[in-house]
Amino acid sequence: MLTLGPWAAGSAAALPAALLFAVSAAWQQGSVRGAALAVESASGPLAVAGIARTLLTNRRWLLGQACSAAGFLCHAVALRYGSISTVQALLVVQLLFALPFAARRRRIRLLARDWAGTVAVCCGLTMLVAQSVPVGPVRADRLPIAGCLVLVAVAVLLVAGRVFGGTQWRSALTAVAAGWCFAATAVLMAVATPALPQPHWAWLGVPFSTVIGGILTQEAFARGSLPTALTTMTITDPVLSYAAGLTLFTASAYPRALPLTAAAVTVIGGVVLLANSPTLHDERDTPVGAAGAGDPVGVRGRA
Image (cartoon, rainbow, N blue to C red; front, side):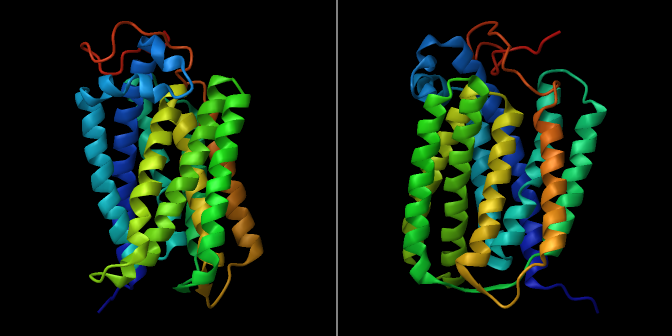
């Protein structure tokens, strides 16, 4: 009789989480970007602050939040049974789910390079998951240092986003900062979930890292296109989580350098193809009316 290990349960929960996060991102980015283009107050230092009231009355944005919450629960289950490195790597699949969502929203067809990038990311993920190593107990003495590193990295990225005034640069750097927050959330959940149903101190940090990451995500969505924001987040998160799995948890073995490098190069190549695809950017779209009036997105794709 075929039996599956805990890693299979973790992977089975990670894939639905990725799908839910992709649906959530597509709905939220369309609503946030459309509202930001339609409201002058969204041009301030924190764009999402100027459109918060609009978003709270936007049905599509609220549905996106519901999908995000459901994805968070699946994510917690995945981290309960699977290693943080494998689970976070599988979450990159949300980029592949979000790709057709973005194209359909803008009523455009995907190019061959889009599908080539998709295949490259899938192949790279397969190699990366194959290199996953089992992790043991957390190295508690390293957690304070890791927490300080996250705070410094987020602050530096946000300052850099203000210095680089371009729309896409700011969106990308803000999304990277959000990725740091979500990686921190993943580490905290990986530390806390094995103790269930007993309480654990790590649960106290989860709301903070999740809320800050969520706000930064909305800011990234307001500043640029879905592929730019989602690509940087979905790559930053698993890369940092993979590193965290090797440094913050005890490991009985380590991945081989050559296959790991090949996986990284393949994934990066696919992401570059997807992120630079001319079919998937909406930076030059203009508002066609108030967001939420008829079209929650509030923008149309170029002809």
